[in-house]
Image 1 (cartoon, helix red, strand yellow):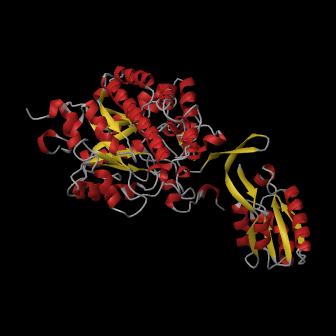
Image 2 (cartoon, helix red, strand yellow; image 1 turned 45 degrees about the vertical axis):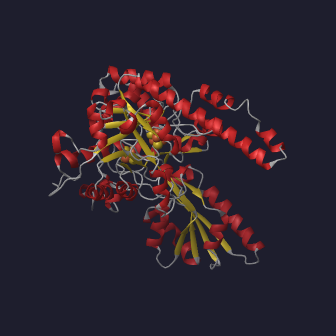
Length: 343
Length: 224
Ligand code: SF4
Ligand code: SF4
């Protein structure tokens, strides 16, 4: 153990241990070597969430590496939560990268299996899967707590220390096994869990009831995955195209009806005045975005009432601007949680 | 068994472009059973090549023969005369047969007419599904007899990923390929062995797989 009984002493760990209902954010690195894009997105997350996940080539699309973006975020004053998948690296590369990540100052790590490469832009690549998310957790925990590499060799010198996270999908099948899988991840070393996006609160509640009955919420901090829906199209896409995702039809209806009093897309097309058409299009966009944020806030408020939920992980990829309004309305995080303001 | 599929005709034609006399050599074992490289497929490919090369104005002499097992010298000896007469051999055996021929008849090049694609089970007429990747460290006793190494798209060893839905693997959702971890779950449940799924399976030893280098089994008790 390091300072004051903390495992790593990151903001995230401190906020979780203090018992605040925490909020973490997420940032998707660019598909280029452009640092400005990161700086642009980072400004919307700074100071309002505990830490920011940086995806590791999410959906198997080549992007700037998670650890390098983490370093840039730290320079900007944001605590990163690096992600590591088993798809692209074997145990040698993973351990090597993690030694470096610790030395660079990273302290939070999410351990994932990784999306299959057929989903991404290099479907002809070879995948690795030397480890899976659970054996990866074990390896990382043993490096931290036992100071050994996977092979059993002792780490002579500073061991890499991370607060270890894992993902959980409450909506995937077999549904009855999912709480046990979460427990298995906790036992393998997950200090916290971030779930898949929740758009079906009753089903998540059922899942959490099982998790609590089994006592797993006492072994790991569970953050509910949430995110604002930007448009009706996005809602439909998530409902039908994203594997392992469930969207309550009510949300699709709401995303549809929130623009029903505005000119339809057909009517906008028929408008003669381009300025008028643009304004009408904007009005539709704003109405949809406002509804998307409202739904997200409602889901967060519902999650606050579910036993065993320690916070939320807000995924607003390519819509980082929305996060501030969400945490402000829900009164979360270092900036807006009333419990955390100096008297 | 080992299963394979025939390469596209154009690819085969380009491989034999420089040869005039070609032997199409089949194998009477696995690839016969999976209808890829037995006597019948040899004869079809041979006629296709005869016709195609005639149309191209560069007619080749195509001979055909099928040996019982192309991965063993003993059976390939029967092909010696045919090989001597030919400029090149197209093998319709699996990759092992092709290599055996190249080793046994180094003066002639044997090219592959098939793409060898797995250790599979014929699950219905005309369908072969991969079942094993010969990882050299079998775990079927832990998984209710279903192989996650070969059948899970991510070779996971600790249960289903977050993309498993309705029993279908996320990776091949359109092809409706079952999620083997969903199948393992139900099988272990039926066997009353779900506790096995709670055990954490640590990092697998892949040294026994191809990752440890080319594998070789030597049985001293059987050697002459
Ligand atoms: S565990 Fe290995 S040896 Fe056993 S069936 Fe699977 S790939 Fe084959
Ligand atoms: S859905 Fe099932 S078979 Fe497909 S990758 Fe996930 S666990 Fe493996």
